[in-house]
Amino acid sequence: MENDTTQYAGFWIRFVAYLIDAVVISFIEGVLIIPLLILLGFNAAFFQSFTELQEVDPVVLIPAIISAGTGIYLSIFLIT
Image 1 (cartoon, rainbow, N blue to C red):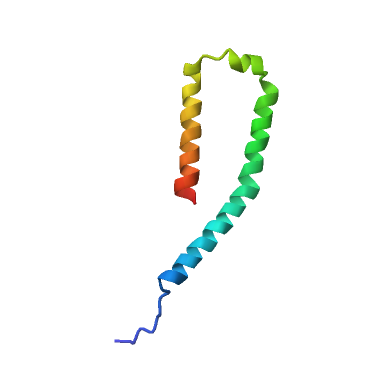
Image 2 (cartoon, rainbow, N blue to C red; image 1 turned 180 degrees about the vertical axis):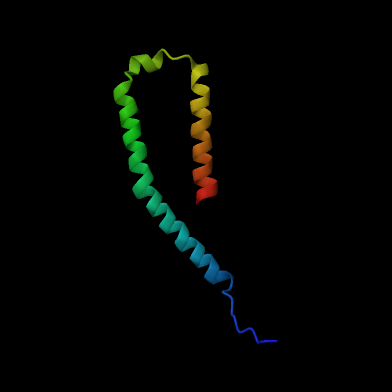
């Protein structure tokens, strides 16, 4: 049997690597996704006037609120 000389990284090296990965992914997410969301938000604001938004039945907004909450949960707790 051959001697295995592989030395695995310890906890702190893996922890620092995880932190670096999280920073890089967050930066890429900020550069790519946030401007896209801003553009989509501005487009939605241009197509709807604020008086039309006030006349919407609150029950219709429930799926939007659930979707927004799910997106926030996923971005905070699962992606980072």
